[in-house]
Structures are given as structure tokens and as C-alpha cells.
Image 1 (cartoon, rainbow, N blue to C red):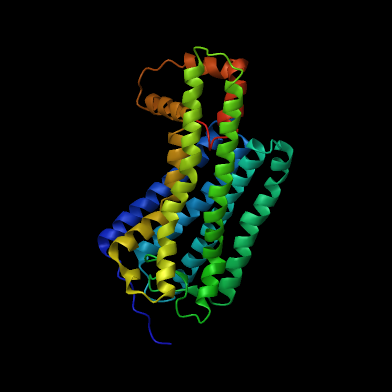
Image 2: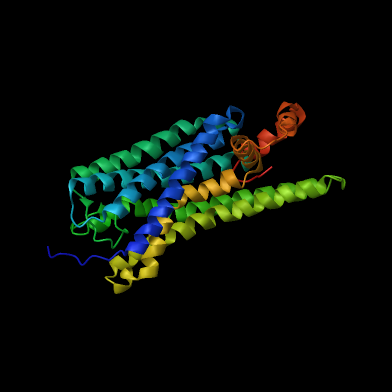
Length: 331
């Protein structure tokens, strides 16, 4: 089969994408680290977020190696890098949808037991299915050099394989399409349920001094529910656009801006999760700030934080709202 012209990835693009990989790696590591540093913040929802972060961390490592290496052929390390990124990327899709399903069952259906019982199935599907797909792709020699038409310097499905479209779908795109549909539907249902619950409560709750605080937390929750699927789609849509352009043999697949958006979008997921669910979650952010202040020997008063932790009247709603459902609440 004739050689496929490679999409040129310029040095400045490689640097920007590598920086994106570094942010994603650090963000994923921070999510994992905060989970192990503070046992009182551990909940099922945050455990699922940790598993997603492990997949995103592997993706960041493999993509960073690929973009720096800038493969020109299906060498052994190209196949290895492509296999790792295929497994991690597919696993990330599964875990993202699994978390949405988990939150839907807890918030909308109020079925905590069912949601917890599904965690073992989440593991089976989110780790085992990507592993089987990746092993099959490597065994059949489908992973390799793709001329950066469906990647940005790294390896994925060999563009010269006769059935490369089928394997591109199996190793990522079909799961990506499913996530595009599933995530907005689930989060819209969750958002609508929360809004109906707030409206029902407002009919009977008297106007208290704390109502403004409650309204603020509700607004934050609503914004997060809106932003979650939007961020996922905005980050991933560029790789889908280039995939479709590749199928159409369009020269626009080599557009520099599109290549840049594809590279950053595929590699920034771990950093985006960290921003949303660590830096924008007040209880975690406050502890990080306290740790940084301690490292730089600033004087801080730990009494307010300890008082909150030791007060059972405040710990209850805190764990039920923010820690149990970190994707939708801040405080």
C-alpha cells in the first residue's frame, strides 16, 4: 500500500501539547493524592473519580511520549505507546460514563445500594473491555503508525490497515460517540431532578438567613451539572472532527488549528477534572491551601477547619452533599 502523507506537527505544537500532557498528569496525580491524603474525604463517587484519574494519567504519559517521539513508522515503541494510549483512553470513556450512571442512580433514583453494587461491574467493564480490545488490536497488528491524521504525533490504529476504520471505532470512536449521547442525557436528568427538588422544598421552607447560602450552593451545583458534559464534548470533539475528515479524505484534516485543538483536547482531560473537582471544590481547595501555607511556614489557624470536621451536625450534610456527590456540589 502506498505511503500516506504525514500531517506535520510543528515544534510549537509539540511543546503546547506536551505542556497539556504535563498539566493532565499533575491534575490526575493531585486527584489521586488528595484521595489518599485525606481519608475522611473518601466516598464512592470520589473513588470512581480516582479510577478515572488513573486512566487519564496513563493517557497523559503515553501521549507525551508519542508527541515528543513523533513517530515515522510502526516501530516497537510506537506499537507500545499506541497500545497504552488505546487502553487508557478507552478506559477513560468507560469510567466517565460509569460515574454519570452512578450519580444518576443516587440522585435521581435514590438507589444507593444498587449504585454501590454496580461498582464491581464498572471495574469489570472499564478495565477488562479496553484490555481485551487492546490485546486483540496488538495481536492482529492493527496498532501502529497513523501519519498523525487521527492523532497528533502519537501512534494509534495503523492508517494503512485495510480495516482501519473498523478498528478506530472499536478502539475508541464508538465509545466516544456513546459518551457524547449518554453524558448529556444523564446530567440533564440529574439537573432537572435537583431543580424539581429545590422547587418543591421552596414551597414549604420559610425564608431564613441561610437561604442565600443554600441558593449559592444550588447555583454552583447547577453550573457544574451543565459544565461536565460540555467540557467533555469540547475537549473530545476535535478528534472526532479529524476522524470524520480522514474518512472523507479531506485535506482539512491537516489544518494547523484543528491539529492543535485535537492535541490539547485529547491530553487535557485529567487537568480539566482536577480543576472541576479539586480546585473548584471548596473543602478540598481549602485543605490544599492550608498545606501550601504550612509548607511555606505561614501562620494559619486550623481551628475553623477542625471545628467543621469535629461537628457532627455539619459533617453529615457535608458528606451527603459535597463528598458523596463531588461532581455537582462545592460546599
